[in-house]
Image 1 (cartoon, one colour):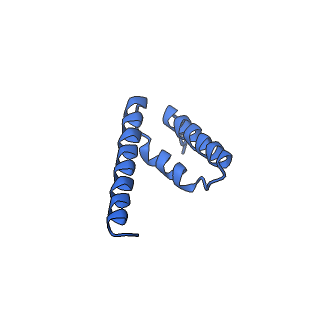
Image 2 (cartoon, helix red, strand yellow):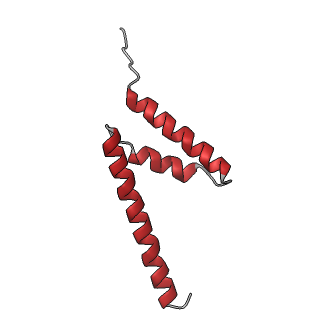
Image 3 (cartoon, helix red, strand yellow):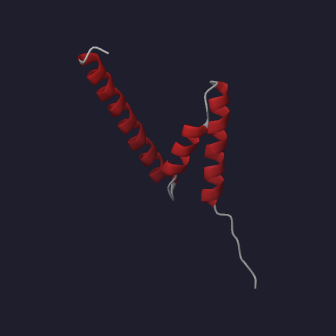
Length: 77
């Protein structure tokens, strides 16, 4: 039985994203765990779809941070 395994461009793109996350995280001396997970989750079949997923994720994160900040400020924390 012969198994045909092909490594596609998505694998290379994911590996490059993980590598960049680790390098940048080490530069800023933070844990690379969450940036790497976010890179894998945001990875799509095309570059433009990956970019859109990343932008959507960043907008959601910023909106959540602002909402939590306002809530904590209004309650006096």
